[in-house]
Image (tube, rainbow, N blue to C red; front, side, top):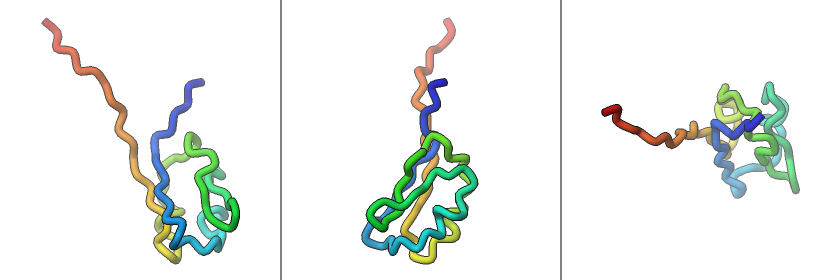
Length: 76
């Protein structure tokens, strides 16, 4: 299927208190808790809804869109 992540999850581990809000709200079950901190376990499934980022009470997560690098070839 070749499903590469379209979004990157930047999680500030020092800010995350492991409250589980982001995990519970993610409609695609991308996030989980590991050692009491949020991690992006399945980043390829992310749809970029930003619910995790908007609802994190500690501002510990940021979702960034990844840009695909393409080769621009001029038609000649």
